Amino acid sequence: MDNKAENASPVLPPKKWWKGKLAWMKNKYLLASAFFLVWMLFFDPKDVSSGINRWRKYKELQASEQKLATQIEGTRSELGQLKSNAQTIEKYAREKYWMKKDNEDLFIVEDKAENK
Image 1: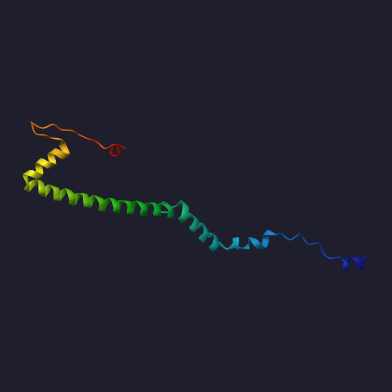
Image 2: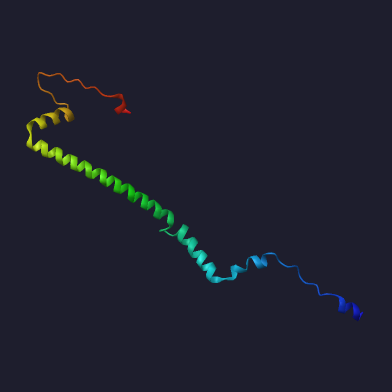
């Protein structure tokens, strides 16, 4: 009987497959860094997607500012012409407000492409 006990190998529990693969989960610094990264990317009020949306809105506002600046310059030059020339005032009144002289008939032709 002693012979059998010496030859018999001890019974080892089966090796767990995940034990070696999830060993990195014990590193608290890696876990804290991963949590911080996920938090900053998705849950923080200043996350990446919000930053991208704010940048796009900023670019749209810059383009709008440029367009409005050109409109302001055009309006200022038109105002300068209106202040200096009486014929320009008459032309402006006819085009913008459809004013006419007493002995004239006014025909307004609208383009269908503009109405759409």
